Structures are given as structure tokens and as C-alpha cells.
Image 1 (cartoon, one colour):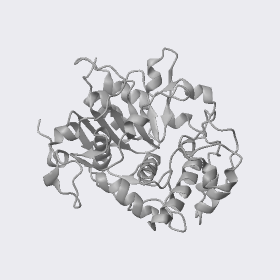
Image 2: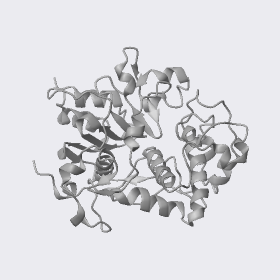
Image 3: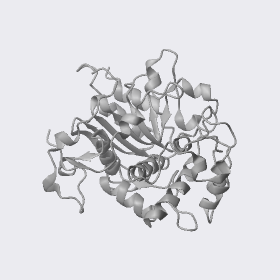
Image 4: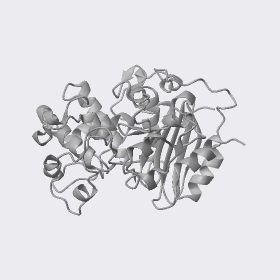
Length: 363
């Protein structure tokens, strides 16, 4: 099957010289090895039609499934097209991590830096920037603080927050950690005299053809780092392809290397989440339990409950997911060179475990 033009050069936009691109099949190859066994040809079979049926019956307005460099399914409904921008909510968190990774590459900060290096109010606490984006820094979840209507200056709110719990053994999901991280990132970008929106556009979004248009801002025009991006179905798909290719377009690097490798590291203390990415690692354990992410965050705060949580027993253990409220998803399965982008209407009861069961159950 010959990929359509937008997939043959999946990262093309006006700033790229496509004459330097290598063939599309090479773009899709991973440049690293995940600690998973190669599935048999039987196990590689998936059911796009079943997944599409489940998605559509639960508010799905777009679904794109790509495997081995070819589109297996692409559909849109409700007046949308594959190019229609759509709020992706907390997928924004991963984009903020990408912004931090590019800043780290340029020496502006390190995810291993203590928060106290940038915020004096954290001087008696040992949390790092990585802890902030893992929801394990001890910061409050922050919803009532940052999601107030007509908030003028969220950076001042972020600087005033003090840690409430010890580091590590907590999982306070919400905007708190990411808005604190964003405030720190913005302060470091001042050294380059680069506004955060400009950095997001150039370093994060342009590589997969997206834009900061419509991004959620506070009253001062500062971008939110926990939610607020708008992406189309195809832009999500292109992001997935770029991540599977370890941030490369042909021989050119577009994003920092090793992002998925880091996201897939086995962390026995907290297998399900790392730096904006949800993982299915715990599915290999006979004591693991499937979770409904959107129902559980905010209500299940016990660290031990999350330690044995997975997304799906039916899906491969190397499955990674970017998750946004209302069923906005980007799933990646490196061992199968699989990308699944999904957008949908909030409040329609979308469940990861049921969608993934429909995708990976072939009988």
C-alpha cells in the first residue's frame, strides 16, 4: 500500500527542504530497542474496524491508525476533517515536557535540577523539575489555583506555591506541577530573550506542522503548560511518527533524542506515568489492574493503588499514551511500529481499556 503524500513526507512544511528527506519507510523506524520481545506475526494483527466502532460509539470524531509506514484507517465525523484543530487538553503536558527537553539540550535547565535552584520558597524541599512533571514533587494538584476564570497572572501564583507533601510518594495529578515548571522554563527562556510561545512554536510544534494558534493563555498572555493546545488528527499522527523515529526526519533531527526511550524506562516505584507519558508496563504483572484514567485521577490519590495500575491487559506492555480529557489520545507501540491518534467529544464515556481491547483483540 502506497502511503498518501502527507505521510510520505510526514513532517513537511514550508520551512523544510524535503529534497534532503530519506524515504518514508526509514522515517518510521525506531532508532532504539525497547525491552520487549518481538511479537509473532499473529500477535501483530489488530482490528482497526472494531476500534473505530468503539471510538465512534463513544463520542469519537476522528481516528487515525498507522502501522509500518501505512495508514490502516483514517476517518472523521461531526463536520470535522483530519486537518481540523481540536482541543487536546492534557496532551499539552507532554508538549511542555518537549519544550523543557529542548531547553535542557541548550543548557538552560536540567530535569535533575532541584526546584529550589529557581524558587526560594522550595529551599527546604528536595524535589526536582522531573518530580514536578511527574506529579510527585509534593506540590498541590492546583486546579482551584490555576483554572480560575479570568486569572490575570498565573506565574505569580506558581511562585507563591510551597510544597505540601514529601517528595516521591505522592501523585497529585493536576496543573500545579506543570504550571510551576512552566514558570521556571519561562524564566530561563528570558536569558535567550525568547517568549515562551515563540519557543513552543519553533522547538516543539513546527517539527510536526502544528501551531500555537488558540493556545490557552492567562490574562498576561502567558501560555498554560498543563492544558490549552489545539492539534488536528493528522498533527497528532505526525507527532507519533516523529517520536517513533527518535525525533528525526530523515537524517535531520527535529526533536531531542531518547524521549520515548526515557518514557519507557522501567520505574518499579511508579510504572504507569513518567514526564507526561502514560505507560502500560505494569500489565506484565499478574497483580496489575486496569484503570480508567479520567475517572481515577483526582479520586485515587493513594500512591500504592497507582503502583499496580496499567492501561490494558490486552495491549502490549510497551504501549505508551498521551492522554487528554474527553478521550483525546495518542497511542504508540514501538514494538509494532504502531501509531493511533484519536479525538472525541468529552463526556461520552471513552475508556482506554475497552478501546485497546477492541483494537488488539482479533477474535
